[in-house]
Length: 630
Ligand code: COA
Image (cartoon, rainbow, N blue to C red):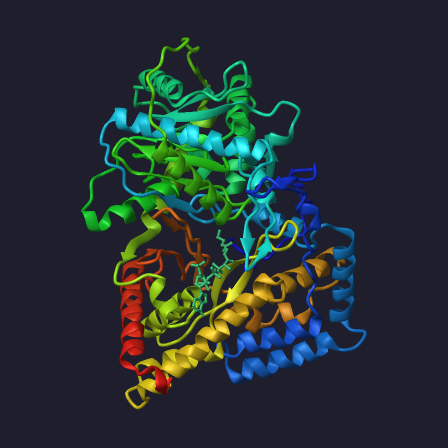
């Protein structure tokens, strides 16, 4: 989801991600076999002229007339017949013919080349509804059901019976579901890689559980291949809990939260020791990780979700649960003793929607599953993973603790539920709820800063084979006109409504363009990467001030809708920006806003308040303006 476009992609060797090689045969709910992946269309390479025109239109509300006219000249030169643009476009089209998806390797590379810590910077968090347990039994029971639910979901992946998802009536690529279990990111001193153990000769049959910073291997299948029952898992979790009561253990997992170069070096150092290497491999190979967290500091009900969001994003710091993680693990479910629960996932292999689909499934599973006390054959004690902490490893841990604590202090998180209305209201106004919320964000930002800013919204490219995401640029000339008019006393309400309607239509049109592979950001990235691969000097359009402005997304946003009343959260993309996630339910909208405390100009709570006001004012405007005058 993090486009990382703003960061320069260096030409380094690419650690090819492991991905499913066998064709994925999936079945619809009707069980009608559908070898659907093979039938998916390829991601198109949009026409060059179209992208250039759309790029200029996107710049219009963001840069001065002078900058825009300079960029127009650069674009004209780029588009010149027989010029650099044409050559790069041909290269891209060639690549598209030769590959399943011309973008997917470069996209993965952008994640794996990024040297920023994965915690906060790229890994999102998901907060599940508050659970009403406050003790170890409740924690174990919940964790046991959750593990059983994920295993039930995994059976659909293993049997290839996962129902195909649709967007706008079109089937979606299901590949990401095959990347989230049994996979892990591995750090390197210059670049990382992702390994997927699900497709090896011996797929894993264990998960890892971490409690009080101590990792355990928990085999989750019986010898006959059947998954452990909730009851069995509960019994195993109790054993783990009881043998990890000491709280003075080195938080080895905190190493994974470090800057990637630092962690890459520390990793090589750590696995020099044979025991450490085996322990690290066991974590990496596991199906997923469950973090049994210690209780976090109590906060008011108003701040509860914000506190849990921070717990999901970074664990709260070295004193709390940041060492109770392996941040490289693709899926980590987090269950706190105090009833806080959710997950965090490493973003390189997949986007939010498949993860949230899995969450929805597991939550439903948990509702219908009760623990049944039945006679049990005693299971062996889960294996505790040993680590030899050499002085050098200890030094690395201390460094990681310091960095994590700085990151924790720097992250400003505000999670709120807007309860005045949900997506039913914009629908009743015949407006797209997503576009409506994006316009509210535009209004909130404009009221706070009196300017609009480059805004990024993730949109799915999964209509195409191996598709990931495209950016919807929510700021447009139409959105600017609307936000400027909204607080202008001289503008009639009917005109404001008309401007809002146009801004929403423009956003929805961009969104449709994006999901059909005709937006600009991935194409521009492709042209840039093609230039790097061709070893040509970087075309001027990418060295232009307008380009730098356009790629500096102060608002980095994403809707990840779910059936469960959950909140998703992610960090900002730029130091002076915001990360905004929302989950529109029928009658309320869950929001999370993040920013960095080190930036004086940003404030997550303030933006949340402005957002709430914007949503209320937009409703008032629509309700007070007769439909006939719209
Ligand atoms: N009038 C009435 N109803 C409307 C409407 C209109 N003009 N426009 C849309 N709606 C309805 C839709 O039919 C839909 O109905 P449903 O709730 O019954 O399904 C609902 O409103 C929501 O539509 P909308 O708000 O327009 O959004 P969407 O469902 O099309 O989703 C995205 C938009 C961008 C979230 C989606 O296309 C997408 O790409 N999702 C993936 C995002 C992603 O990958 N993020 C990465 C995170 S890591």
